[in-house]
Length: 361
Image (cartoon, rainbow, N blue to C red; front, side, top):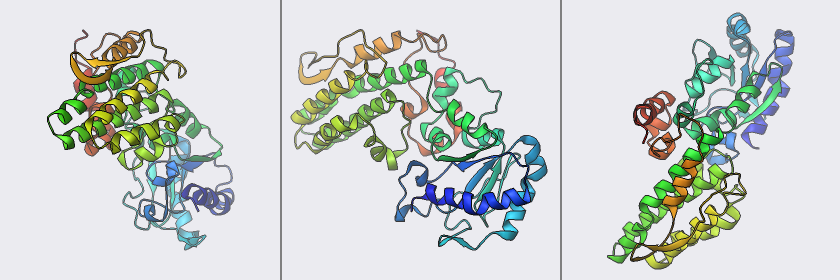
């Protein structure tokens, strides 16, 4: 059984009946969010060491949290079954214990947690409700953390706070996406010829490493065009395979990585780039320049006019915080270092250091 379905049944058959009896007037939302492979539907027998099991997060008002949160957590602990559908109720082998904070509460003995909407926002994205969601804030939000808030499932809506937060962060604003797309093509422009250049001097390993980096960049363009957040490395390929564009691109990118020599590797990358570039209009990001493949200056390396594509996308931005700003990228495009990606506070500081004080060109 998939973890989200298990937790849904746990809420409906165990937690909700108890809540209706013990706290009959409690307005709440219920669902599952945060850590866990099951939030993306990628859980299997091996992934059951990462918070997998019957669990549910309740979202209540500030007043009800102050009045009832401790009673809910303690009260359920007194009546909880030892197991549910054969799975233990407690936090079995779970590396991320329940959060205990000013507006979030849980216990390792069972899988029920209580949050306010503010608590969800603070513990997941390190944001306060009054924080303006401007373009720089959006660029500082790691997509893995956004998935932790927007993936999973809502089991019950009695308050509306959980669906509202998920809707708010479900997709980046258009200009932020344009900026990210421009940054992706900027990255491709910077390295695409090096696949052939490294191979040309006999560095096949170097050529393969660069090709793999570029394959990831192409895949990230696809996530952006389809309005989907990209998960961290473990599930990046699995999530890409669910995109509509993967039907065409998956065999092309696989061929690039399996190419025995640099020539088909370089040519395959260029063709994959062309296919992705031609998807922009249908995705709602039309280009005013024509994507084309040609030699890299006077060298025998076929490349796409990625620099032109990047500049064209950046020129379409209207947000004054982003328009004319150097195309550096979001936190995910600048680094994949886990200490930053896993820390919204650190990611924000790093992003602001890179972008907030930079003079516009």
